[in-house]
Amino acid sequence: MPKVYLKNLGCPKNEVDGNILLRMLEAEDMKAVDSPNQADMIIVNTCGFIDPAKEESIDEILAMAEIKKKRKVKLIMAGCMAQRYKEVIKDEFPEVDLVVGIANLSHAKDKILGVRDGKKVKDSVLPTNYKEYDFVQKPSGMPYSYLKISDGCDNFCSYCTIPFIRGRYRSRKMSRIVDEARYLSEQGARELILIAQDTTRYGVDIYGKRRLHALLEKLEDVEGVNWIRLMYTHPAHYYRELIEYLGKSKKIVPYLDLPLQHISDRLLKEMNRKITSKQIINLINRLRKKIKNLVLRTTYIIGFPGETKEDFQKLWDFQKQYSPERVGVFAYSREEVTASATMEPQISEKIAAGRIDELMMLVMGQSMDRNSKMLGKKIEVLIDEKHKDGYYIGRAYDQAPEIDGYIKVKGNCKPGRFCNIRITGFEAYDLSAEEWKE
Image (tube, rainbow, N blue to C red; front, side, top):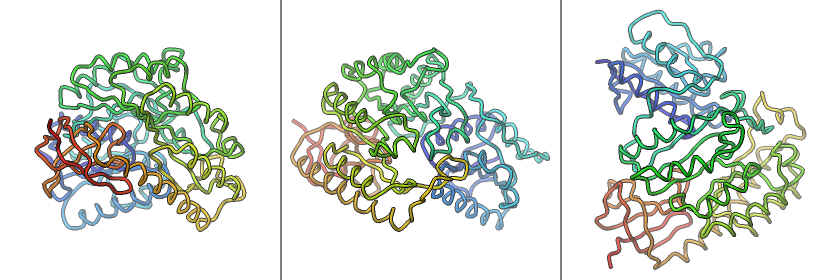
C-alpha cells in the first residue's frame, strides 16, 4: 500500500482542507504516515497569505526536495501558495511533481492518484468554488476539532489576499456542518472551534441573511460537545440576535476572536474595514455587558501604509484602556494583488518592528498582571495531552489551542477529559497548576 505524508502549513482552515484530502486518499488505498522519511509521496499543503507564510512554505518544499534527492518519492505542492502562484511554481521548484490548488479537493485527489499510478498528469489549479464532500476531516487525536463553516471572503480588506486565493464567501449548509460536528464528537472532540474567513457573515449567501446564531443553536444540541469556540469574527458583522444568543448560551465559551487590525479611523478606512473606532468601542462595551466573564482575542497590524506616530499612539492607548486579553501583533506585509500595495508612504520594517516591540511590552505586562491574580484559584480545564516530561497540557475556556497560552498540570488527569485544578504558578502567557480534588 503506497504511503503518503501530509504537511499542513498555515491556518486551521488550511489544516481542515488538508485533513479532508488525506481522508480521501486513505479511501483510495493509501496509508498516512507520520514522517516524510517513511513516505512514497509527500504533500506539502502550503500557505501563501503573507511573506512569512510564503517563506515557511518555500523552506518546507526545499526540505522535502532534499529527501527526494536521496530516494524515490513523489513531491506534491498543494494549498494556498499553489493556488496563488500556479503559473511560476514549476519554474521555481522543478523538484515538484505536481501542483494542485485548493478549489476542488476531489479534483486534487484524482490528480494525486494519477501521480501515484505513474500517469502523466498536468498541474491543475481550478477557480475557487466551494463544494461539499462525502468525506469529513481526519480526526486530529486531540480533544478539540476545527469546524469549518464557510470558505472565501467578500470583505476585500485592502491588505488581504484571501479573496484572490480562496474566492468569494461561500457558506456550508447548516445540516452538513451539524452532521460533521456529530461525527467529530463521536471521535472524541469535546470542543468544537468554528472557523471561516468571517464566521459572523455565515448564511448571507445561502439563506439571505446572517444565520450564525441559528447554527450555534443547532450545534449546542450535539451530544458529547462541552465547549464551542467562535473564531474569526468580524467586528462590523455582529448583529442583535447573535449577541443575544451569545449572552445566554450554555456551551459557547465566553471567548471571542475579534480581529480589529487597528483603531485609527483613518487607517480603518484605508484598510476597508467598514467600521469606526467608536463603533468598535461600542461593540466591545456591549459584548462585555452581555457576556459574563468575556475574554477577547484580537490582532493588530502595525506598519500599514501611512501609519503615523499618532495613529500608533491611538492603538497603544486603546489597548491600555480596553485591554483585550489575548493579542496577536503582526507587521504589515505588502502583497502585490492588494489595494494597499500601491498606497504611500510604505512604513519601514525598522519602524514597524520598534512599534511592535513597544506594543508587545504593554500586552505582556497586562497579561502578566492578569495571570498573577490567578494564583490559588480553582478552575476547570480541558486536558489536551500528556507531555513527555510527565505533566499534562490543559486549557481553560479563555485559551484557544496553538495561539494562546496553556496550563502545565501536575496530577492524574486524563487527556480528552475535563479536570479541576488549582493554579500554583504563572508566567506572562502560561500557567502552572496541580489537580485539585475536594
